Length: 270
Image 1 (cartoon, rainbow, N blue to C red):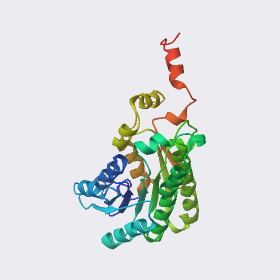
Image 2 (tube, rainbow, N blue to C red):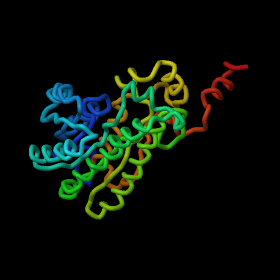
Image 3 (cartoon, one colour):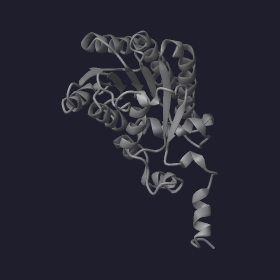
Image 4 (cartoon, rainbow, N blue to C red):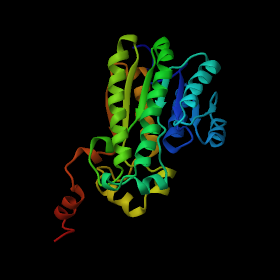
């Protein structure tokens, strides 16, 4: 493997949800490693402001619930840069209202379930479908943002978690069907990550509950997830495909209730 394989020199990357915490951290890191990036977001004005801070970056509008919008994003990217090497499917249906209403299945509104799947699963599939002909040409790759909730059961976020589990299977399917063309497809599964959206949607008590189950001394930052994404997008990961890289500070790696056990054995609990 010649040169510094973790570099992204000459590559063009589309990052959906590029105006968000993880999306922009990934755009910034990829740019620093030599890539030219597209910040694609429904909040296009914010995406344009952020793109202006990165050399060679552009911003394009994206509505993941709209098939034509997704297809136009890929067409516009290739028209502007004449190639596509990385598709980072990072955007998802999030926000305080969604988080408050995405609970257990017994209380699930059909409209919320359908909307979640339309954006998260259908939108991601259409983005992959639109990008794959160009990724075959460049022997590029896809990195999907999923969640450690896709690998565990929880009291809340049944729609979000199951939609992310569906994207894991989509990841494996694309890796299997397109490996022969030199296309890789992987996923990164963050845990609770300290982004502006998280701070808005989840109260401190819930954040503390997750932090207590984290094996690090703090929750992850957007930059932690960006490092995982940029690695998988690079030639340093050329032998990795069809995989889920969990970046959650070890939260999903241990038996439930570790916080209580920790308190017991440290003498904090009678």
